[in-house]
Amino acid sequence: MSIYAQVAKEGESRRVLALRSPIDLQPIGELVCANRDDVRAAVARARAAQPAWAARTFRARAAIMERALRVLLARQDEVVETVVRETGKARLDAMSMEIFAAADSLCYYAKNAERFLKPQKKRVHGLLGIAKQLRIVYRPLGVIGVITPWNGPFILAMNPAVQALMAGNTVVLKGSEVTPYSTRLAEDIFREAGLPEGVLQVLMGDGETGAHLVESEVDKISFTGSVRTGRLIAEACGRRLVPCTLELGGKDAMIVCEDADLDRAAAGAIVGSCMNTGHYCCGTERIYVVEAVYDAFLAKVVEGTRKLRQGSALGFEEDVGAVFWDRQMAIIEDHVADARAKGATIHVGGRRNPELPGLYYEPTVMTEVNHDMQIMREETFGPIICIQKVRDVEEALRLANDSPYGLNGNVWTRDKEKGVAIATRLDTGSVSVNDMAMSYGVPAAPFGGRKESGIGQVNGEVGLRGYCHAMPVLIDRFGGKDLPSAYPYTQKKAEGMRKLMNFLWTTPIGRWLS
Ligand code: NAD
Image (cartoon, rainbow, N blue to C red; front, side):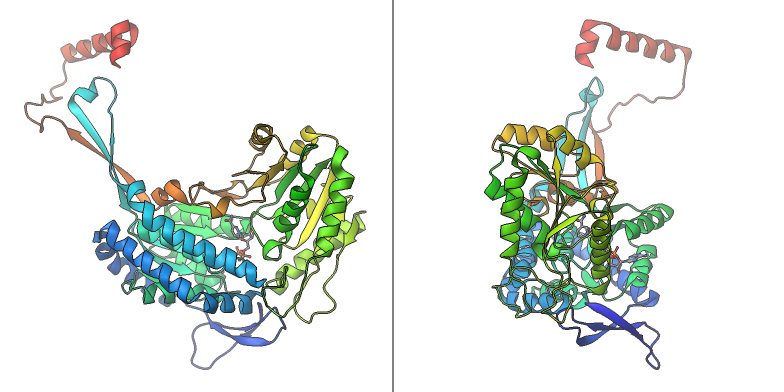
């Protein structure tokens, strides 16, 4: 999508943006941005709807998720069509990333939310345990503001929404101005599934609308997007003293060891770098290959990349789609130009596709890259495979960790345990061994970046609990009967406490009791 104009409309107090498709740059509609009043009204509706939604049983909430799953499967072609029109992504990318993953998320949280959030009994340690019981009760936070980017416009809305809803919250969600209609479908699908009014509302708008949402009376912000916006949101949440999770950008490294299965590793490098036109937060952006297998690996990657099919017929037989919007194209072109000027070698691609009228960049393989180049330091987010030769795994690890980002990473070796040992030395949020980054698609894996790649974790049990307040309930075992009062304070009580401390922490039996 490209936003090519701001349209002034008589009598309209909202900004109106004109949109055009990345496939052929033809106009495809307008986006009316929600203003501050629209945002406030939506949050007020969500606030009013929340108690009744939270009062429903998990089973009742799960039934709606199950219905949404059936609606999604029935309407999958329409979702794919909308996503492809707005983004130009390959049709199979749309089906796997948006539909399959959203269906999996609906099913997983419908099945597991109750188990993750049921009240827990905890043992109270020491002498206090004689008199007290502890339960942890997970209470929904209230209204969650969800703000999402354009690279997965449907799944990145559905996945946090399902989690927040299953935890008993209501949601006001703002999708990206680049892909508004794909995100809007999340609301349509839930409405058809019977979600009550006000429980999930999708707002259309740009960054200004997002800023209004952050400043509104929401109880948490769940943000996915760039580091720059993430910082602004963290600052605003800090001022308001509301929690946020920030799922931000990445510059993920791949390490290829001497004993890797090179066919699989080369295939993983190509998919990891080019899937979703490279617009994948956990996309493979830097590849470090030990010198013993460098030539063989490079030959396989070059051969595989040459076979990739790029086109605008938008069928299932195309591998790499369009760049989703013009601003990303500018970044990709800048990074490639900078690398070329500093001595990189381009083996395949390295330019816009001259055969296609839209925003298409050819899948590219590049070597002789180093950390003085933007392409090895900043998020490129394009179908670019950057390969650097290293002496050994130690050098690969040093370079992989030499990054302001830390979202994901992957290691390739036939020795699984060695792979785990290397992978866990990467300073990143999550890692894969012998696969490109899949972690976001595995709900049981807590997902979140380190360093500038984000704050907090989403998905699975951790993510669901993140949409709740874990409230400890401390209960007196004896119904509060015959409890001696702490007052009045006396010298005698102080002496008694001193003796108790000596007994508890200096005698063997005391240590056992405490
Ligand atoms: P972006 O930060 O420009 O925009 C993201 C969202 O924030 C949009 O909806 C936008 O309208 C909104 N926004 C912009 N300014 C705002 C403000 N001041 N206050 C509130 N909201 C505001 O990011 P993008 O270009 O849409 O997305 C691409 C980025 O997202 C990449 O860096 C990518 O790595 C990252 N991403 C991260 C993950 C993850 O899970 N870590 C997943 C997907 C994408």
